[in-house]
Image (spheres, rainbow over the protein chains, first blue to last red):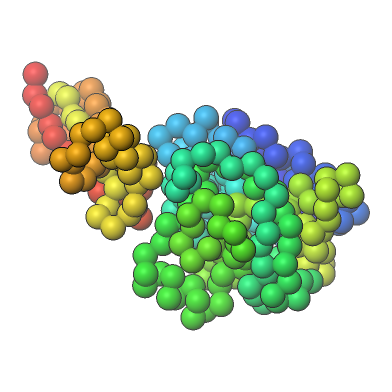
Length: 220
Length: 81
């Protein structure tokens, strides 16, 4: 397993994500700066949460156009797994690697609490260690997690079994309670909840570990 | 040359902030409001001297970065000065 986590100016979950990955993968995870354009051979790229570029213009908009993203898009098209969490999800939609967009939470407040989600599909490198329908408790912390999607796009996601997670108590107004979606090749996942913050008893839960175990089982 | 890009949500995309403004107006007694929408304006100062070329360039900027075509529409106005 060759994994790396990208840091943009304003990322703040990059270390948490690396720590969670390293614990499950039992090997070092590389750190990539957003200005890099030549990447080492990789099986998995993590795009972490935070407030890249201060959320200026639109959340994730400027990070999505930074030098490293063209290379990540190229690798994603070749099948490399890409995991975007929170701001990482926003960056992946802005980069066009995932459909839809994330806008201001419906009730306008910043939501920071554990939420219940269900695993919708186990058919992905990110979710195969979960049983479909399993309920997870994962933290969310975001202001712009309201997932907006056109009706035809939603129908396509459902038909292709590309909804990875759904909220049980929708905290942000997302279309069809969607908390995480897969790209067309199933090797790109964007999700608002933070699995890396549910990987230790001291986090208050360990429901996120199986996501990294899924990746370890698939990509090694 | 100056350009102005006006960006707004597409019809059908609910804007929670516009809805909050509408509710606040109603709470203040302004009962005749039938809808509120927000438009973001980005103004650019351009070196270009050709109006059509400038407009085409600003459209490319809008498609690439300034607007997100998934949820937003934009219009470009060029003002010579």
